[in-house]
Amino acid sequence: MKIVWKKGFIRLVLVTGILWMLLILTALLFHIWSCQSSVSFFSAICNKESKVYTILDTMGFVSKPHRCLIPVANDPNKIVIPTGKSSDDIVKILSYIVEDEVPHNEPQSSPLFGGHQSWSQREESFKLNSSMKVHCGFMKGGGAEMDPVDTNFVKKCKFVVASGIFDGYDVPQQPSNVSVRSKELFCFLMVVDEISLKFIKENATVKQDSDGGKWVGIWRLILLKRPPYDEPRRNGKVPKILTHRLFPQAQYSIWIDGKMELIVDPLLILERYLWRGKHTFAIAQHKHHRSIYEEADANKRRKRYARPLIDLHMKIYYYEGMKPWNPMKRTISDVPEGAVIIREHTLMNNLFSCLWFNEVHLFTPRDQLSFGYVVYRLGESFKFFMFPNCEYNSLFLLHPHTREHSSPVEWVKRLDQLKNMSLKESRGGLGLWTPYPGDLASVVLPNVTRTSKAG
Image (cartoon, rainbow, N blue to C red):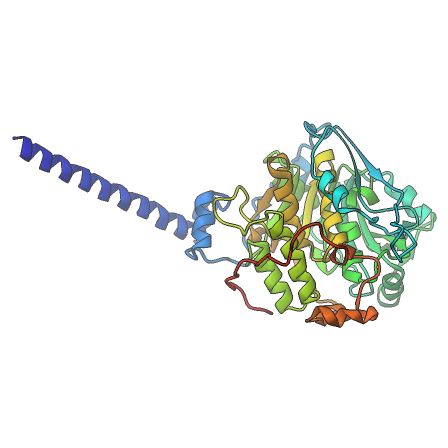
């Protein structure tokens, strides 16, 4: 009887285990099917933010649609805007260093927009305290000055849709599907340099109001005099990342790149990505890459910056403990699509933006490489919502640049080529030329499995 009972029990355990595995497999197959179903009911019940979906996506079981429906509210007029501000539990006071300390042995005698931040100052900036003072651009004499007419105008802007055009690569694209309520609530601010302002005047209708403000449709043009960097891509990071510094009265902001036409009401965007889930910072995940080392490899293949400098940038991060992304990380990706950023300007978010910009100022202007590193350094203290890429692509229509951007530094393949001073930036990326306090010669970057085309 004991032998029969044991054999029967073993059979029972095996059958139960098999049935349980079949049930899990059926659930996973249904999950995959529902996420890709054209039937709205089934696609709506798919949770694209779940850990299961992320793992299935990583394993290649889920195809990635380019666009998908955004679950926005039906009527912007019925949205209840939260009163007050989100609480800041960690950083209570945040101030900025505004006087640049130029090193005595530094041949560049004039102040830099992002300052001459030392390695020790950089390290201290990641140590969170209730009161913090950090580098955050806008050093006195460093450039990017705003016209007083524009400074007075932006003081009244609490809700901002911001964009930027530098070096004349685009013309402003007029947003569509904007409600009357959003037109009254939001300031649509297009930050430009003098080259772009001239180009826009030649290719679009620019109107001037009684106060001297310049407008292209719904966009108020905000002129930044004396661009702080040699590289237009780096100049574009100023309004993109330091939105809270340009528009200090703003409580909420939505950033979109200059070549984009926004096609979703901005109030619906804030409700979907911030207020509904009680988030304060939202950004989309990259369509192809989750590891910064994958993104760095793609940047080199696409000639987005000097290849040896991208390698040096990544070696510093790897030396400082930044591991390649894996499904066990707390974030669903280390690489964002940085063309749309949705923020409440809390002190923690402002600090994150400062630290993110400092990395862009010190190293390469490829902000997608720095985002995940700053998230890693701040750990659980910085919380954000990374939403599906297919929703990101449904927020806008993409228009081509008026001309292709190309900078000589992007074609550099070897460090010795940068001995030619005309290829080397003089006001940005200086951390790549400052002796690093660590042995980078022994650093071997992790292997990268290419998951996307170079183009």
